[in-house]
Length: 494
Image (cartoon, rainbow, N blue to C red):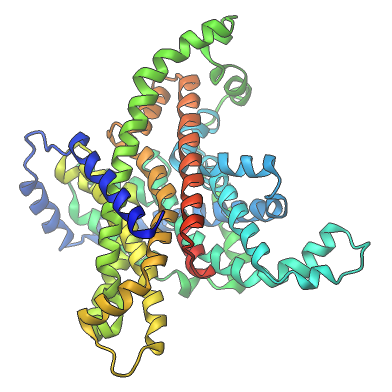
């Protein structure tokens, strides 16, 4: 299948999905709410946020500890990623969103530091293992091949393979820390003491000035990450994060919580009561028809529309950061816009839009499209800047350069980036159910709230299978189209 046909197919599927999506405002007038929010955002009230420094530090501590644990475990698994049990484990870990991990871990560990760290570390282990394995495979294999035949696998990995991929691993880990900080902030929406918790509190009170102060501090923290996170300081950051979380107080949980969770709570109800396979199937049938299938359909609808809108925004906006397209002032404004949009997690953006438009699929679609569109536009813009030195001196500038030089030459990377983000958009769409959108996350949240954890686990398995299927289809399409990316650009998109 050619590239134009793939683009046409995805756009057509998005248009077909539109009539079935719930974009209604349900009599909600967003104008008054939007004006109050804008008024508060233009007058940030830093004085109202007494514990903002503590929330920032805890956001950072959860992110550093979670990413460090995920990177360390992922590095151990990376050499074995080609083995199907390891690969299946990694797919299962990364297919479940951090918020879903947090909801399940809370049943065992409560609102403890371990819940926040593991909620980040578990999916990141699967992500790191996959990316590190690819980086090891792409490194020069000749030093490993010339070692004496009797060299053990560990020595071969430590002395001949890992050093050649170390720079790529370091760069990707720094990028993943930025993602971990977004995840850490979002964990505040389930009760952990990060920036998301304070943001949720101030929005509930209608204190938009204080909420604005929180968001400004959050963006500054993300934007300055390369200034304060230096490689030589990493051990100190990790020690400080662990020390902070070790003394953080949390509500105690019963000593038998883990055994009760594994041996009772997540076991399907019919099996707990001594039922057979027929009883299990009878229990699964209504769950499949009334929750899994409707949740899958809603998730796919929102994700498909968001993917098409993401592509449109990214393709139209990548020229904003190319100096010969928009000029120096336009480039600076474009960079600022893309930094702000890609700094906010999709969940946080959807939460903001929910205050304006009310409960529907619209906040989710807008949030997914703006965040992912900004990421792809940023990466495409960097690719476009790298092409400028090779252009003729008499090459056009402005819109002509964008339309006749950059857009055609970047069409392959554009499609590859959209396909890379497809799996991520689907994961984030599922978790939008925690905000009331009728995706799979809505049913998972309801099952957890009712303490029907057996049903929640089945729904999580369905979410994981859906994500894995889309990941497989995405890789097949990229391979068939021959679309590729530079290693650094690809890693920044994972």
